[in-house]
Image (cartoon, rainbow, N blue to C red; front, side):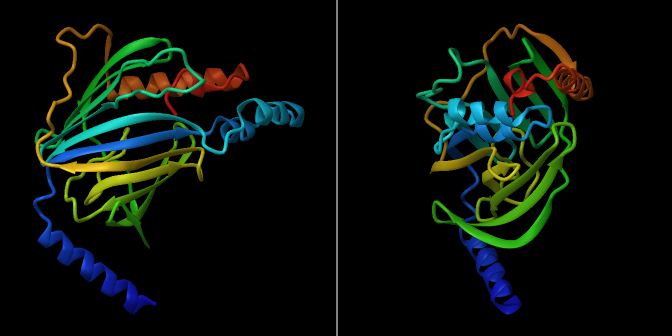
Amino acid sequence: MKSKFLKTIVLILISTGLRAQNIVGEVEYRYKIFYDKIYSSLPHLTEQEKDRILLTWGSPEGYSTRMKLQFWPEKSFYTFGEPYEVRSYSYQVADYFIENNLKDQTYLKYMDQMGKTYIVRDSLNAPKWRVMNEIRDILGHMCMKAVSEDSIRGQKITAWFASDIPVSVGPEEQFGLPGLILAYDINDGMLIVEAEKITFGEPEEIIALPKKMKGREVSGTEYQDLVREFIKTSIESKRAWMWGLRY
């Protein structure tokens, strides 16, 4: 078994060398959230409330949105794709944009969260990943598994990255692995984000921020403190925090 895994790693490394040109492109992701699973995990709900939520929000397909990532060796842009396809659970699409500058090791996030619009700027600080001995094919790319945790949100994160696309970025706030993240899930399927299409080469239309961004400017640390307090207050009030904060 170990020998087979080592051979697979060698093939991945060879593929990386042969396909090193895969460093510019665009990925279309499907973002699927399963509110029935999230609600059922909340400790303050009674069994009757959980059953009612399963009837109201239960969906084998989840509730989905299309997202888009554009990437280069030195940067990446991430926002909503088109069509938005926000289904049932929201009447609008909020602003959500992430720019990672790998050259300067900085990021910019522009997003509607917790009832306000925030402009967050700070230095990049990658999650602490552990690469595992598992592989998976996604859109013809052999991907390796990595795991991490978000202690503020109480989330277990499982990501799959393609080492033959040697850019250290991914969807949402996931990055910092030796290859493009093509899929990840939170808490065993409460949220699933997975690539549906990859197009290599310079994108036809580059994602652009509005020329004038209106919102509260905070540092990364200040924003995390706001998130921590919002989740704490929501739990104390027996509210589901994911309605005001992206899961």
